[in-house]
Amino acid sequence: MNLFVELVARLLGVTPAMASDNALRGLYLPPEASTSAGHIDWMFDVILWICIFFFVLIVVLMGLFIMRYRVKDPNAEGPRIYHNTALEVTWTAIPLGIVVVIFWLGFKGYMDLAVPPANAYEIQVTGQKWSWSFTYPTGHVDNVLHVPTDRPVTLIMTSTDVIHSMYLPAFRAKMDVFPGRYSKLWFDADEPGTYPLFCAEYCGTEHSSMISEVVVQEGPEFDEWLTVASNILATMTPEEGGKYLWEKRGCNQCHSVDGSAGIGPTFVNLFGAQRAFGDGTTTVADENYIRKSILEPQSQIVAGFDGVMPTFQGRFNDEELGAMIAYIKSLTSS
Ligand code: CUA
Image (cartoon, rainbow, N blue to C red; front, side, top):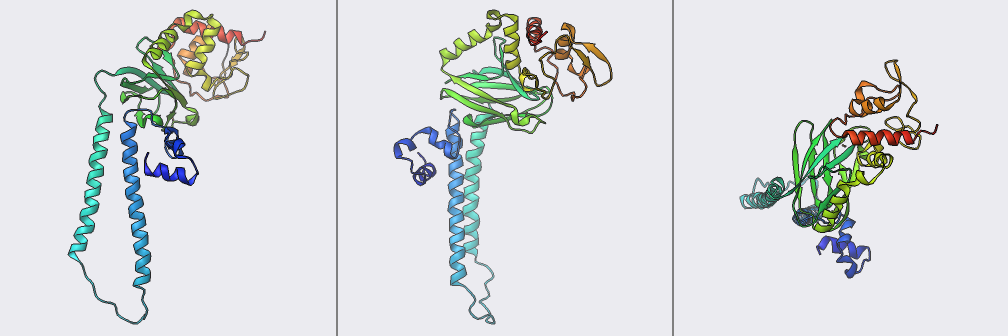
């Protein structure tokens, strides 16, 4: 239990038994759920306490000096003091020592986080406007990050459009995600639970809803989840599969299934309808239209909407495209 948390706890009237709970940390920091979070929070506390110490020291001394050395006679000439070598060396050497120690501890922590262990479990991450996709070694693609406990996990991340940033506050982990190159982020989750996952780089209109979750599970539970999730389409009708993909692949961020317009057109009563495009042409929304809209969205922008949809080329196979078509068909009333 660190002093600051205890202080806050006492001010709020929280009992010591409750104060020992990791959740109490949530008063000023998210709960710790990775092996590196402890070091980072410890560093944070060290710097915080150094700041508090010097803030109090400087303000108190300033107040005392204002009172003690107040000019009583405005015409009196004060003593002429040019410099004091011992004092100047002291106030240079002590802060220098402090920042060198902070740099060393911070650099060591940074290097530990920058180099993933060789045996880490790898998950591919794709950021796009405005959702996350996590691809597992089995080929399963999910919009929620699942990771096993007590095993280092490396995220290998890229973006299909602009710069995003993967932010996992409970792991104290954050890394930018770029188009056209890969960045890596690793952590070792040690506390089962569900924690928030954010995009921390402004990436356009729906940046603030580019939110997901990381689910930390015990090893065997994670393996079981992955096996079930990897074969899930085989257990569903194409229609159910389409609904599942609509959620899991991030279609739901822009396309509603309740008739309301979002960033993109709704899926309700889409199939078989006449579509008018920004360039004045029209077509009927049949199977080929839906397929093309997923794989080459920029080729046909519906009038009244911005052409912001990224391509899903290579991210939907034929079976999945069929499921999407079946689902969209099922949302047409006639
Ligand atoms: Cu992606 Cu902000």
